[in-house]
Image (tube, rainbow, N blue to C red):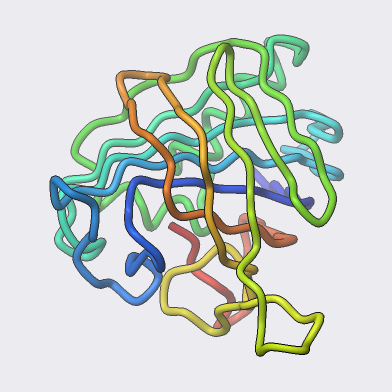
Length: 205
C-alpha cells in the first residue's frame, strides 16, 4: 500500500545536549540509555484511501545503546480524536508494515510496545510544545553566534527525521507505553515521509 505523511514534529529525550543518536553515538543520559518521544503533527497525509491529515501521533522510543546496535523498543500513542481507521493505519506505518523509512526500524527493534489512544496535542511555532495524556514537554532553541538571531541546527545527520533540524532543550516529563523520563534534549523540524522515499533522504530514528 502507498502512504505519505508530512508536517512538523517536536521531540524530547533523556540525553544530555546534544543527543548523539543522529550520528549513531552512545546515549549520554545518566543511565547510558536514550528514552525519548517525538510528536508528529500530520498536516497532510494518507494511507491509500485513509486520510491522515490533521492527526497528532506520538512515537515513544527506548534505545539501550547506539542506534545500529539494535535492541530498540518502539510504540505509538494516537490522538483519541482520530478514527479507528486512522489509528490502525498509523500503527501499520510506524510499525514498518507498510514499507518506507519505518520499515528499516523493524530490523533494529526487539519489542513493539503497541498502539494506545490518548489525548495527543501539538503546538507549533518558534518554541513548539506537545502533550501525551498527562505528560507534556516543550522546545527551547539554542541560540546561534552572539549578536545573531539564528538558531543552532544539525544538518545531514545519518539518522534524522529531516535534512536539517533545530536543536535545543526539551524540558518536561513524559510517561507513556512504559517509557518514562525527564526531558533534557529537544529538537524540531518539518518532515515528509513516504512508502517510497527519494535516494539519500533522511532515515529517521
